[in-house]
Length: 369
Image 1: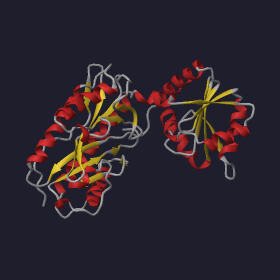
Image 2: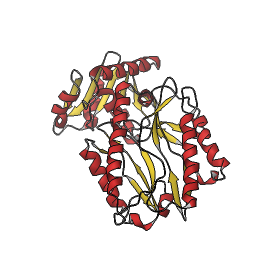
Image 3: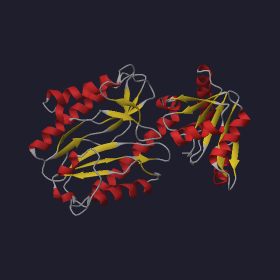
Image 4: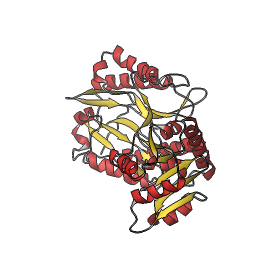
């Protein structure tokens, strides 16, 4: 698979943004969020801005990326600053040449310091705060984005299968985390989506536990939350492994969480609100008497970043649309015992949904060593 999306896809995305700029009565938008620059251009470096105008686009970068820009952004107009040229001054000059009267800026990511410096350097240009314009475009994945996410899920499965087969009681959480990243890279991934969570027994009560030197054999179960970056797009999964004879409590709680997750996945469909999907899963845990032990939202969007819109949570009234990809990850946590969480990546389709991740989630005894 080619690393970069097709230039036509990039152009279509910028054209959609161009229409929004016109509708809002602006003359241009300065995109300074590096992830958004990647989405709109295919450029995977940083320290670069994109100026989108009614008549064209200008990628503002520096000489370090000259060759990379030619490879990743063929046909895109470039403004390349040389050694000794400061980004603010160079950008201000490019904006002066473009002569927008009302310039949109990404208020969600631009620092106050940069905004004030631009205002001082460009007193004749009105800076207009915008919020979430590119992120709204990123909500709906196209066919290539979906395929890349599917590949990220497959790479995560392959890495997990190898690591699960290699587990021993002497392995530490950190060693398991390291091995998952190594195996993902061996299968062709760029790396992991985030620092892998490997939490043995009571440490699984920490939803964002960092791996430590605790041994797998120190408890009868281990929670692993991992994901793979296939090159640009991310996956995010969680499984619980029983590493000894399954206790009645573990079996009961796991059954509740699994039932909750399946209810949440079943609720994913076009038109359903994010809150409704969250409620479908949360109701199962509430009815089982563990509602106060489920203290986070049901899931989040994934894509170029591991946490994107939309959010599956209480109070979120956004309606799901085909092309959105979300995680579904209910959990139950007891500080003195541990936690159970099960997570899959789910695509909203025209007919309902498709689960992109395929790691088995039956609670089988995975006797290690």
